[in-house]
Every structure is written in structure tokens, then in C-alpha cells.
Image (cartoon, rainbow, N blue to C red; front, side, top):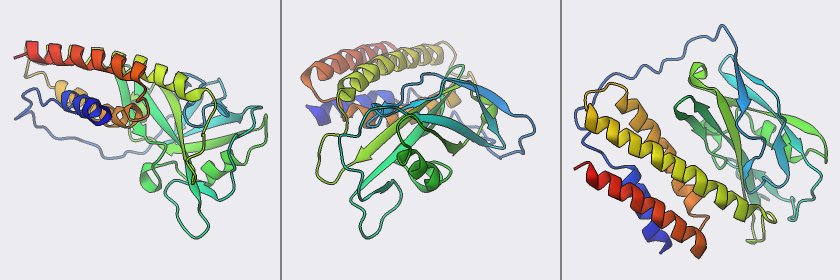
Length: 257
């Protein structure tokens, strides 16, 4: 059931909707930043496995010279797992027993613009592994900073941090966050499906609209992120809710034919 559901999600979110021929040049060349961009956290809650232990400091932040620097606070809750032998994602070596990391979702007016996965390292992850280890070493009540590169700062309005951890023995990662994370995922996924249905209708009304290709590309990127999140929400109550949302998308896609 799990694999079938996730397959449905990927298939329907990646529907080509007859985009054959929607070409165009993508100008992604980096230009020197001359003016910082101010952004706000979409939520102070950090999504994912470490959400019980950290939160974003609720204030404005700046994207400057292609970097966003976010202040994160370690709350007063004890880890319920051992931190010995853990390293950031993207690193490996003798003595490494598990991995942990933080990611960021950057949003514009129309939805997600850039996504840096919590499990990514190197160029796809945070600016420095030292930022990640610095957060993991914080004492209760302390704050630290973590950075990511941003490709198109001018498009970003808000952001939300994500997190993940892989432990060597399969022990519990957090207490109480899994259910709340899945509930939030369902809400986010349904909102995303609604926006995708609007995109289908937009394409049907005007297939030559030059903005559709970029919106579709963004949707594909978001779909990939949500495929990973869906794999963590396999309880029957979540599967049933996801199935209803997937069926709504399938019905909308069929009506476009």
C-alpha cells in the first residue's frame, strides 16, 4: 500500500500535461548581490525529526551576497537518543554511527522557490558542515546560526527549516513530533495539490502562457520533496487521507483531457 500510494503521488504530480514544446532559455547565471533581501520565517517550528529540540528565532533575516543566515534556538527538551558517533549528512568515515542535518524551504509569492533537503550534504546542503555541528552542540537555551546559499534571493519572501536524523539502531528519533509532522504534511500536501490543479486549469485555458513552464518546474521540485515526506506517514489514518487527496488530483487531471 505504501509503495502504491507514493507511486500515485509521483505519477500525478509529474503529469506532463502536454508540455511538449514548452521550451525556452533559463537564465540562472549568478549576479553579484548589491542589496540584501529581508525575509521572515514562515513558522518558527522546524519540520522533521529534530523539531522537538530546536526552533527558529522569530525575527527578520537577510539574504546577503547569496547567503541566508538563520538563527536557531535549542529548547529545554532533552534528546531521547545518544548523540555519540553522529555526523552531518554528506560526511562519512570511521566511527560514524549516524547522520543528522537541517534543510530549508524558501518560498516566494507563488509558493516554494528553492528547497535544500535536510539529508543533503556538499553543494546541496548547508553552506558549511560546521554550521550543522554547531547547532547540534548547543546547550539548552542557547542559539546558533546556520547558512545556505540562495540562487534567486529576489524571489524569496519567507522560509521554513526542516530536519532529519538517521540513527544506527532504529531507535526513536523524537517523542510526539511524528504525528504532528504528518498532520502538517497532509495540510501542506493538500494545499500543494490545490495549487497544482490551478496550474492544470491555467494550462488548459492558455497553453502558450510563458509562466507555466517555470511553475511546472517548481511543482516537480516540490513533488520530489513531498515524495520523501510521504514515505514517513504510512499509518492507516494518513494513508486514507492521502488517498483522498490523490484521487482529487486524479479527477482534476482527467477532466483536463
